[in-house]
Structure formats: C-alpha cells, structure tokens
Image 1 (cartoon, rainbow, N blue to C red):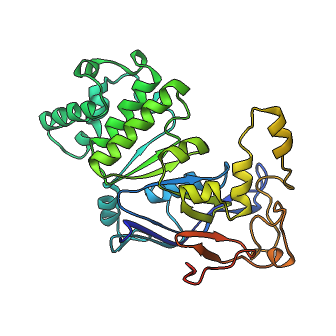
Image 2: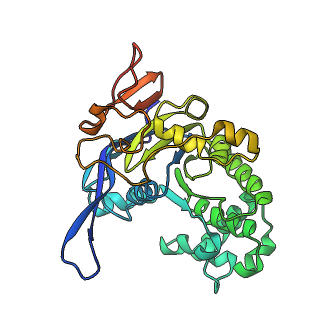
Length: 330
C-alpha cells in the first residue's frame, strides 16, 4: 500500500535568544532528520515527552509553520516549499481536533455557527453549510436540539463532540488528534475514543493521534511512532512497540507509567540517568546518549541508523541488528 503522506529528512529549527534582552542567539532543533510514512485508513499514534517535537511536527503538516529542510510528499506533491495554492489545496484535506474543546469554541457562537464557520469561510452557501452542519452533528451522535446551544451549556464530552463535528464537516482525509481526551473525565474518555474509532471505520479516515497516554495509544492505534528530541527513534505495530520495545527511550516511556501496587513499584522501579532535554555537545551524537543506561563510546560521536529488526518494526540504536530483509530508511 502506498503511503498517503511520506515524510523524509524533515528538519525545523527555531532561533531563540539565550537571555532576555540578549542579542546572542541559539538554535533549537525541534525536528531533526525525521522520516515517517503514514498510510491511508490507519490510526498512527505519536508519543514522546514534552519537547520531543510532536506538536511541531503536526504544525508543519498543517502548514502553520514551515520546515527548513526535507520533504512531505502527499501523493506525489512535496508540500515543503510548494506554492501557496498547492499548500492550500493539500491543507483542505487535513482537519485537527485539539486538546481543550472549551478554549477552541467561541463562547459567543452557537453550536450551529461553530460547525458551519469553516464551510462559510470556504464559500459554501449558507443553506448547504447548515445542512452539512446537521449531518456532522448527527455523526457525532448529538441531536439537532443542540444546534442552538452555546459552549457553556455543554459538558466537556459534548464540547469535544462538537469539535469533532466541526472537523468532520470539511470532509477531510486525515485528522490530527492532539491529546483528544486528556481534558475529559475518565468516564467520558472511552465514549469519545469509541466514537472516533467508529467514525474512522465508517469514513475510512486516517488518524494521527498525539498523546502522552499510553493506554489511549494502545486502545486506538494500529502503529506507534516514538519521537525523542525531534527524531524518530522507533516505529512499529502497537503490540510490538509497547510489549517488545527496541529503543531504550521507548522503554523509559513505558516504565514511567505509574504503578499503583507498592510491591510491584519497588520490584519494577528503574532509574535512568540524566534529565529530559539533555543532549551531548557533539552534533552527530545520539540524542539519548546522556540518559541511556546502555550508552557506548560510539553513541557520543555518531548518530545510530534506523534499522528494521523485524518486518515493520524499526528503531535507532547501535545495539540493534537488522533482520535479513531489513532496510534502513536513511
């Protein structure tokens, strides 16, 4: 199957001041040599600590910020450096659902107007926009009576359903779900996740799910991509990545999930050196070298290749050996 999006060697660097009122500048590599394929109709989970580059990647895909290098191939069209009209056409195939629905719904607009607004901006006649808004509301299992409601009259789960309806009304191919349930009560999270999965199957949507919640990722994702300091360090099926992690950082993430049983917590406690964000001075070094419990001399001077250990399961680490059919993605 051909990927719907093929990302190759993507890089995004931000220039920041070292101190307040200082002219001295520093470079922050938010994304560094990132490569990944996203396939039609799949649910791809993207995980990593805060600052790993997940949100920046989504912003680059949505053309909210531009990459300095690399390519984003969308069915034969490279979106990096493309003309504005080309990017605009590609952007219309994306939709996004953010973390906090309350802050993303205008408190002065009714539900109907919130759902219709993206269509009106695109020049869709109001009667047609109203019809499509009602259909979108029906798809998220809400009655027409909510069309005249305001956000403050809705629960958190209902607000998120409205946000999903607003995304669906554009009839996208790809939906980016940025922490779609983290602001919701536990009792509501499962309902929203089940709704998203039903919609994905019904409409054959492609999801990129960004979250720190490994339970959510295990429940909804077909594959998982793990980011650390702007790089893809592991990718594979959900079961393989979570049950048989190959990269030390993935292992860190999995074992950072709190364990309620104090006996198990003592038995399974693992200490990892270093702090999040620490990287070696050498530009070519492995980004995890200062935190990795398995660090070797070569890690401090060279970036490990991304190798395929089992079919479809790849990771960046010098400790790994490729399978007979392995291919590097670099």
